[in-house]
Image 1 (cartoon, rainbow, N blue to C red):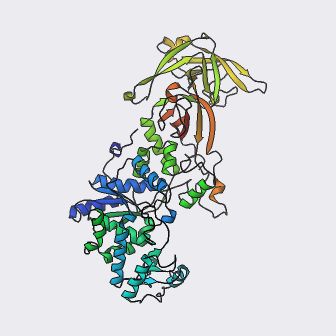
Image 2: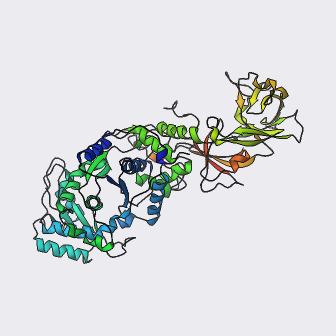
Image 3: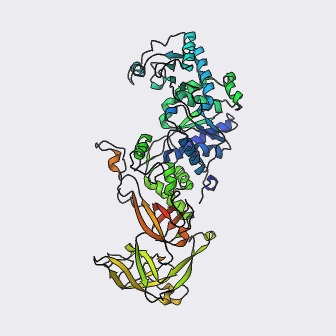
Length: 579
């Protein structure tokens, strides 16, 4: 499987972000490019994050630069080391490696010194308003806000109060440190935003050292400046935050005040400070999905799915277990492109990327999902032979495999019809089809149970149609697949489909919730048979089950003796006609 980014042969990309990078390098503004991927470790990454990962790491690699992985761990009440590990696994699974692993908590001392600098410069103050009062004073989009009654506190009083906040003297929510910008600004983010809040919560990295934590906008911008990030790539919802981002970077001015970085030198971290540029791009939106972390959490906690890595989930862990490949997700990002315009991508585009990758790389195997026995009565009871099949019809380098063949076979129940519909090209009583790689067969007898259900077919294998025989090329309209009943391995086969049955499960204009649109057919478990070479698969190995779809050996439950396969995607788009 082409899981390395280097394997993704594609022409030079010319989106607007890469054009900015090229111009910055050509002008000499930057000698080297440095980006970062800054997730908050409060949940599992979803498919939307794949776009950001591919962009942050991809641009750095394309231009010979570096990309850091930085955990925005400034809200310890919502964060968990489990998520930290999962995020690292996801980034590596997508094919990327970070230059340096950082945490916002690495910089808590620098953030604190930067905040004191803003206080001394008269650009920040300690505010005693409650959260509700702050909202009242903030104004609206059409009305300016009002200055906090604490805005004009003196520098020494502010420093004293802020240091007492740091010492843990005050209760949660009683005070904040706010930037002093402009309460009449048309941009609500500039109306004296909070820079620090009091939170007596133990932190997974710093323990109880800090009873105050920086707000996201402050920590993110200064963190970028600390690391010498040249291009800070964000999704469009941060566009209105860019003026605050720039305000923080410019007014702290790390490059002009290197003494603020002394705590990093004491830790042995390098001095890399620079002025970053924030650039926004449209996020990845796909129909038939929900991306809200709150809703994903609810799906898991309410038992509507089988955990964060349920193959129906749009987390990277779930997609991986479903059989999506890193190459397919990178191909999706390339096809969607980078723009400033929000749009919704059809789920079929995602599935098409997976089909294209697996069609080119996945070995072929035979499996029967809904088995019906076929007995070839003109073969001896103990007839056994070995047929040789290519592993991939278009890739000789994948070699071949041996497939056992015998008198009794399993075929797909849907490949036989007593009363065939118009245009039917498969098995009927007295009719012929080609048995994949084995010859031409005819059904002579249909066996049924007491309820009239077909339980077994008896047929005849044309000896002149066997491989290498003169009649092997006799024209026959239909071809079906099979597995030898004697040699087949019983397998659990999980037939996954889209989790939601409508394009916009988030749309609640009709009074319904996304829960009302869960697809009842999103997961079906059947028990079929696979050829021995499929059962021997390693977990996470993908195949095309011929004529059925693309499947992957489940990374948790699959064993060679008790194989478990998940359907990754059907051979063709079965939803296009429904839309």
